[in-house]
Length: 76
Length: 385
Ligand SMILES: Cc1cc2nc3c(=O)[nH]c(=O)nc-3n(C[C@H](O)[C@H](O)[C@H](O)COP(=O)(O)OP(=O)(O)OC[C@H]3O[C@@H](n4cnc5c(N)ncnc54)[C@H](O)[C@@H]3O)c2cc1C
Image (cartoon, rainbow over all chains, first blue to last red; front, top):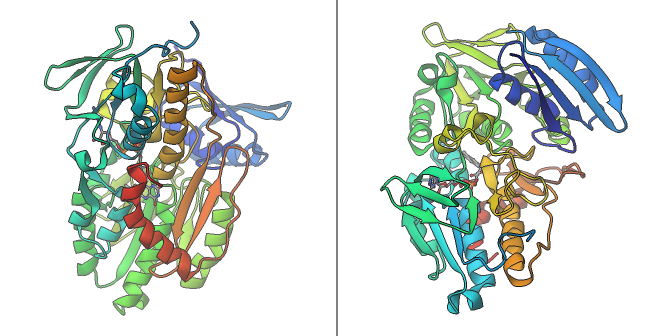
């Protein structure tokens, strides 16, 4: 069964949101959805660029208050 | 009672590296009255009788330090009131508040501190162990130096796994490689290419902004969004998850890290990273267990410096809970990193959860400060700095 896992990368400069996402994507199973929480404006562009380049799937991006919620499905 | 620590006697620290040693010494001082009156007892269990100054490995890899300079006897770094044993923990039983060690001993505790660090796991990537040089262990750093000495020219590729300890190491090793080959008079025969997992050359934006023109100036090529998927050691090609590849004659890699095996086996959290409260540094759902250093799952750089600042918070809070029944401090994400910009210049980055670092141009005096810190470290882990 695939599930959604939260990756809380709010307020971090190093390693930063995309690094956090890469860490947890490596440990997730194919089909899992990860929801990255980020306060970094750049994540809304950085994450989709990476996801597209490595063939994972963008599920959705939404800004709630100050926090970006970026959902990604591990496709391979 | 909210804080189960009140009235407790036995504080057990698992891990005698940077974080564990500072917590132990700091607590031994803060609680010396309670220890003298037998109200508190501090014990430490570690996997080695030696303490290694890990940042020195980068110098070993370039022949600038000998491995024996990196070690001190762990017992010599600890306050005499700490009961220190070399007997690694193999089992944690949180409900029973006890751990079992390799020798079969059972240690009960009232307060547990976990600081077991992290380890590189190059075998997670097919071909990486056979194809690459590393500097994250003594053995690999010596091997890397010998390979560098033999190298007469060609393509050097640098790759970075995620996560890894010491986030500054990728840029530092790159600057050091440039200086090393320049000093040997063969820089013009060496092409250096740096590969980084995200879409700029360092995770810290200001470090990326500073390092990129420096790389351009010294002729280091770079490719971003490069997460190593496989190494073809026979044909000397490193391939990325993103679908690109680079040829190399010498591959220098900072591999992906994980928490220690014992932490992974207990499935405290994915990757052996223990879910930890960002501010109180307690293990999630466990008021009497503190976690610090590399083994936390915090979105904080895995550095000795973070372990040091966390150790101050942990020890101050454990002591205040014992003395007044409440913690007094929050960890605010503080990290301070020296950045060696080659063999004779350095700068630093200081940041926390809310404030990004503001980078100053590198200079010689910061380099000499880092060189003296390499010695001052021993004073720092004794809790005297
Ligand atoms: C090449 C390199 C360069 C670095 N450069 C820097 C730098 O410039 N600046 C910086 O701040 N940091 C740097 N670091 C990172 C720094 O060394 C670590 O982040 C730091 O040591 C982490 O402290 P820790 O207490 O979490 O773990 P460690 O210091 O690694 O200590 C872990 C301890 O746990 C013990 N242990 C392991 N398993 C068990 C068990 N089962 N039971 C009991 N004990 C156990 C080990 O024996 C060890 O004593 C560098 C690291 C490397 C490798």
